[in-house]
Image (spheres, rainbow, N blue to C red):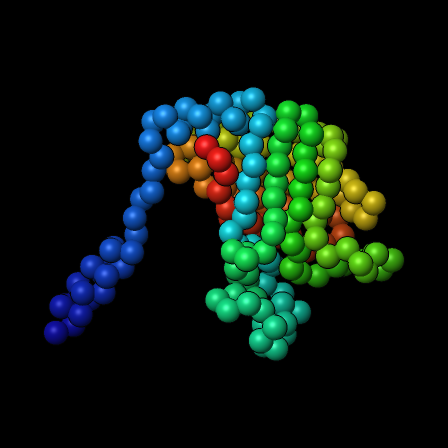
Amino acid sequence: MKKSLFLSCLFLMSCGVTKQTLSDDKVVKLKEHIDSNKFHIVSRSARPLNTNSMQQLAATNLLANGSSASFIDLQTTSNYFIVNEEQLSVSLPFYGEIRTSGYKNNVSAIEFDGKPDKSSVHFNESKNRYELNYEFKNNNDYYKVRVEVYVNNAKTRIYVISGRRTSISYNGVVQDI
C-alpha cells in the first residue's frame, strides 16, 4: 500500500514538471538580442528576503492571493527591466525592509533610467545561460544587479542587492523573442 501511494505521488509530481524549451530559431533570436544589448524582461514573481516584517505582513492577508512572505505573485503588477544598448530602464516593485533612516518614503519600487555605472555580459557555457551584471545608483540608493538569462527557455532571474534595502530576487521571462 505504501509503495503504491509513493509511486502515485511520484507520478503526479513528474506530470507537473515539463521542460519548456524554445525552438532553434528563437534561441538564435534570443542570443542576438542579448549580444546586441537589446532586450526586455518582465518578472512574474518576486522573492523577498523572508524577514520577521515580511512574516507579519503576510499574516495581515494584505498580499495578493497565492503570495507569501517569501513569494510575491507579480502577474498583475506592472514591471520591467529593459536593456537598450548602453541604456537601462528598470521598474521593479520592492517588497522588504528599508534599513536606514532618512530614506524617501514615497519611493517603493526599484527604479532607474539611464546609463549604469558598470555593466558586463558573460555567457556561461556549462550552464547555458547569460550572466549580466549591472551597478547603478538613483537618488535614494546604490544597486548591484545580477541577471541570469537561460537560453533554452528565455526564463530569467534577477538578483538585486541594495545598500539600504533587504535583498530581493525576481523570476521572469525575456519578452518578444
